[in-house]
Length: 212
Image (cartoon, rainbow, N blue to C red):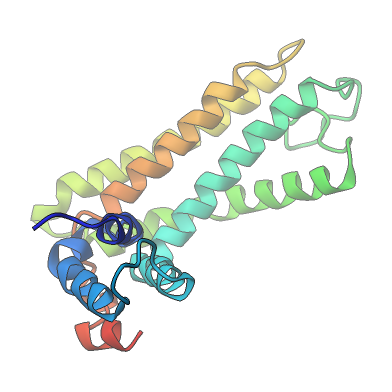
């Protein structure tokens, strides 16, 4: 039986769910969605697409959300440092953050930088602890994943330290661009670590998925 375009696109939207959920319930969700779709449809409805995406984010849980907020904050900070060094902000005050031009530039950019810095400074302990709890790092079979999680967390700390160090360099800080890209890669790595297995009670039941 050939795969329809609707099925292909629905499978793509199912990637919003973690890998363990797709293995266990992906086909059931897909079959239910295809059966409810009118014949000849090539695209999922907006309602179905929204339900799949929001359901996937809900299943991933608050640990993943905190981790992605931390990663996003790191990417914003490095992007801001690059932005600041492309403008005449070098003579602006350098406060305790160590970021050039932190108090200069448009108000919207300043607000984004401040919020990102607050998030980055506040989230490391919760992200590390929440990750260990979700992975169940104390169990012997999960030690490798726990070590990978700790390594990803340390890599994030190193990326910000490197971004701050390079922010003092004269001229445009082009090095911030690969650091920003590294934050995005780190986000993908952390997502894979968290999605490797089900978090137990955080996984919704099949009946609740059908009702959604």
